[in-house]
Image 1 (cartoon, rainbow, N blue to C red):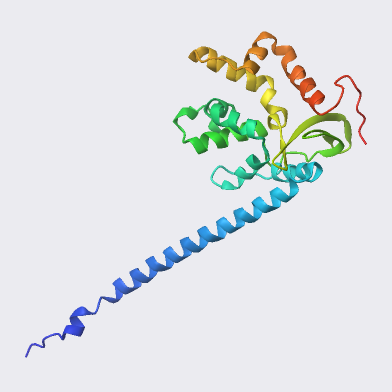
Image 2 (image 1 turned 45 degrees about the vertical axis):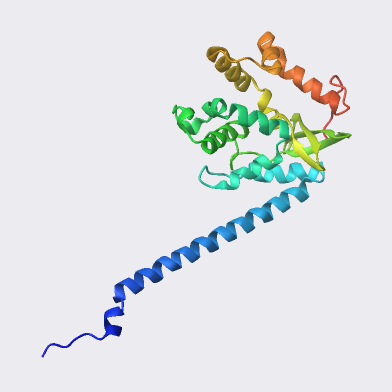
Length: 241
């Protein structure tokens, strides 16, 4: 005699289906938990960075720590470095990221125009800041503040012959780096921007025009102007403390 399945038996899903549903739910829960934890970690890092940026010396110390980390393109932690850049520098980066990305050695000659905007930004920041474990953490020697502008003289540990200025600006109560720590005004960066825009027929900015008029003097002229804003005579000799 053939038995007739009861309604309850017919409704019971196979064991494999139950297991698969459980696995899917577990993955969803883990994904949500991971996102929440990452957001919380990111918020905590932002708080730490903001606290450091209330004072210029602390800001530089924190920035140099982050600069010595080997950030990867797939890891969003590299975006912490952008928290230390001035508003003007962030706008400049957004406008020129596709061009600046060409300086990233990790692209190995690939055209950055085919990259997504975030990948272009990564390559541009990587080229400008050259971050990683190979970086020597500088010593902050002398710091001078003039209102919302400041200049810090830094040098490699034990090498006062490497002393150099790095410029800061206070925005909404937080200290930020200016000119990407000087990389924005470097010869390779300015040459690339001017040549790219000239080839494409795009108008040059006032800074790019100044570089075009006298490439050899441009970087020093920009540094002298920033020193004056920080209340420092460009001709004065600064000794390491």
